[in-house]
Image (cartoon, rainbow, N blue to C red; front, top):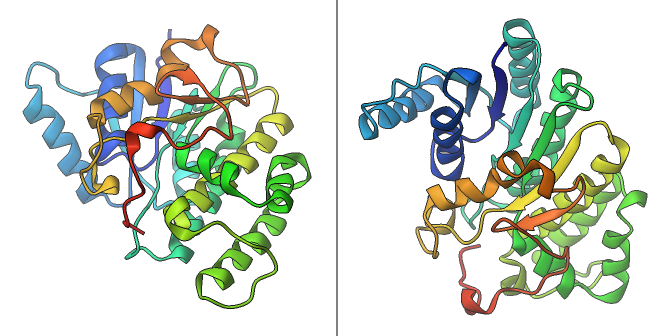
Amino acid sequence: MAPRVYCVTGANKGIGYEVVRILAEHFKDQAIVLLGTRSIERGNAALAKMKQDNPSFEYANVHLLEMDVSEPTSIQAAAAFVEKTYCHVHVLVNNAGVFGREVGSEMCFQVNVFGVLNVLDAFRPLLVPNQSSNIVVASSAGAWTLRALSGQLQVIFEDFNALDIASVRSLLDDWKIAFAGKPSQFSWPAFAITNGAYGISKMALMALIRKWALDHPDIKTTMVCPGYCITDISYHTGFLTAAQGGEHVLFPVFHEKETISGRFYRESKETSFKAPRPEEYGPPVEFY
């Protein structure tokens, strides 16, 4: 039986790295795991670290895939390479994401929202109908951002089937106007509540992925929040290790019968798209 192909974006460090490691060690020769990375140099460093940390496993089933999720041409090139080399992808894990004031809202939206949609568009022909699955790493920040929206905005984002990329771009542009302190069409939540652009990006992503799941019923699509993990993206704050976060991301893989397409899972449990900020997180920290 040919090995199944798992593709993980943003996988040279943090949670994505752990997702690759877990898949490789668990499935062994039954899987080919594509480690998505912006540069082969970073990918080689990640693979070397895996081998150093666990010398008993060769990680021969881990293959590098150069892909910059912020660049549509890079995504298209990666998809073409995967099609030529592997033909299909059985599990696509959209993990790549950015966070922090230094990133800027434009890049945050480009990677966290439109980058994910671009990956889905490019890789959709490689996903096997009624066999492949798509896992999108979301965030509970998107849920508590939706919960914090004013009535009109909340209605707009909850009516996700009426949204498209153009309308979401327009809404995000309006948020940027508000963030700049200028008069905006809508009243947006305080920036501390949403972790700046990050929570807004994850909320927008989750709305578009819910629509994508409805539009593609032959591809099981789940959204997962790995929890508050100690990684670069959280400035090494948090309660969970990146490895624990990786396990939560893979909940739909290891518990396939317990998950439903179009649903949102936080730390391996189904949760609301409007779940409040967990009390144990404490007050928002100004990382944005």
